[in-house]
Image (cartoon, rainbow, N blue to C red; front, side, top):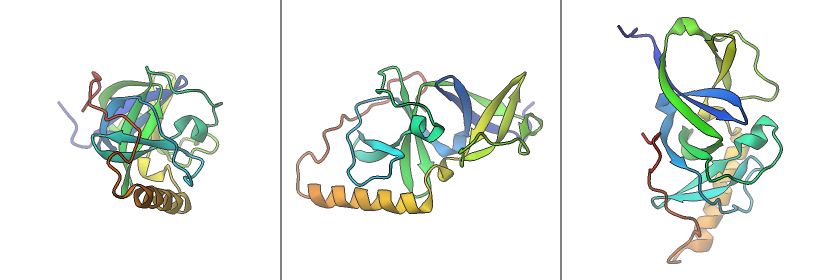
Length: 178
């Protein structure tokens, strides 16, 4: 029997570190695709992708977590998430599953890894701790404003252009699509 207080989470990893996001923050999952640079964007933004006509900024999760730079791998994924007013794509290594989690498995008192501003707690899974994140906290207010300015600049520079972005439309083709 389902506990009415339980919450659904999507589990993913970045370089072997496991994380969870509340499922209600996730729009869908798509296979990673080429990212177009976005001049003037904050350092945490890798660039932009075009998802079925929508221009979506790509959050560089690796950089945010302090991992070294690497090229996008075709086996990587983008988690399309609700992040404030701007949908965002999170670059992740793998998406594992969706699971209903009982409140007793969540600890809000655990320490956050250094620099992880989006931390909301941990899910206990045996000896492993899975870090719960909040997509709305990935980008600071200041960086959010800088991102909006860069997107507006892009829009004004491409007004009237037939194909404003050189990115590829993404159709959900992953077994993880929502």
